[in-house]
Structures are given as C-alpha cells and as structure tokens.
Image (cartoon, rainbow, N blue to C red; front, side):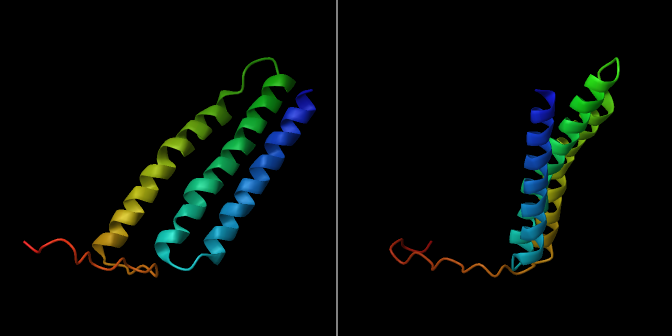
Length: 110
C-alpha cells in the first residue's frame, strides 16, 4: 500500500515539475514565465518531498522532519519570491506581450 502511495506521489511530482519546466521554457514573456516555476514546479517538488518524507518515516524508526520543513519553506517562499519578481518587473517597466484592453469610452473622463 505504501508503495502505491509513493509511486503516485513521485509520478504526480514528476508530472507537475515537468509541466512547470516546460512552461518556463515555452511561455513568451516574463509575466507568464513566472507562473511555471512558482505554481506547477512548487507543487511538483512538494509532492516529491512528501514522498521522500513518507519513505524515510516508514523505513526508519521516527518521523522524517527534514523533508517536511523543506516543503513548508518552499511553500512559504515561492509565492513571496514570485511576488517580488513581478513587482520588480513592474517597477522596471518590463513590457508584457499580452494585449492591453481598450479604454472604456462609455464613462466620462474626470
């Protein structure tokens, strides 16, 4: 039963990590590339770390806390770093390739 759980966690982690890496390589501009490593890859590495924690907790006598702490650190720091990168890009006026919406002409100007 543990082998099936570990296999599912490792397979899920590998798929999410691959999709995040593929998004980083294939997406067109900075803002869309930012989603690959911060969303999918974080979940992928989290699944792999949880699988490692389960494996070493079952194999040894005690609970393996190293992987749990690394997972918590990853889930806390990834959104913060993505926010700071996006804020720095906005400050540096990095242009997005996404089309900007047309101004609304129905409302009167102030």
